[in-house]
Length: 226
Image 1 (cartoon, rainbow, N blue to C red):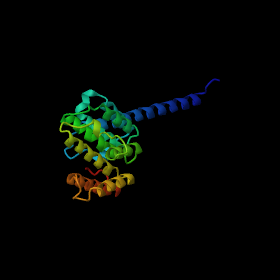
Image 2: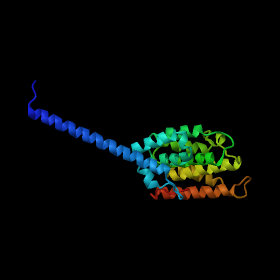
Image 3: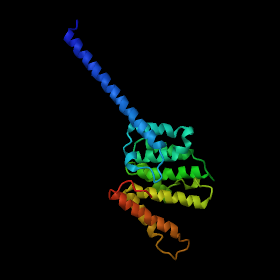
Image 4: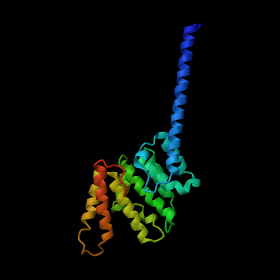
């Protein structure tokens, strides 16, 4: 069929609109990715700002996933992991789990220990929307699973393992989830007897802090730091 000028003009206009929309979408995606990378490279003395991290879009999360796989970005990996957890992106759990598995076992340096702690904090933020992250943290602090303490102890042995346990407890506090509160309360009740053999006052204090953090998060005081 021979097209009339009107038909050709309408089709051409539609094509121009489609191209403009595609270019705009590409520009927005690039902006989101660049913004996420800027957060990954920034220095935050008081911790990553939750609201900024929560605003990371799909393109930004994809850029962070790419950076997490890049060995050249190793010194930023702890912050990248936390950003992914805060973002709540559905791809974050698998990436964080892979990253945790890639960390060396046994005695490690401070930088690696920092990454191990970041994994637990990131899982806490992610657990607000991802049941897998919540289950991983609960398994770590209870006898219900292998957790990660056994394969990720720092250079100071038991002291480092205790630091990872406290990070996991803080992660549960950050989740704001009902199941997390139940686990924290149960653990805290088991430490109330100060005369019991092996009583750990430092752990008892940290459990109390984790429960207080949980109450703040559950009460919508989001982004609280452990």
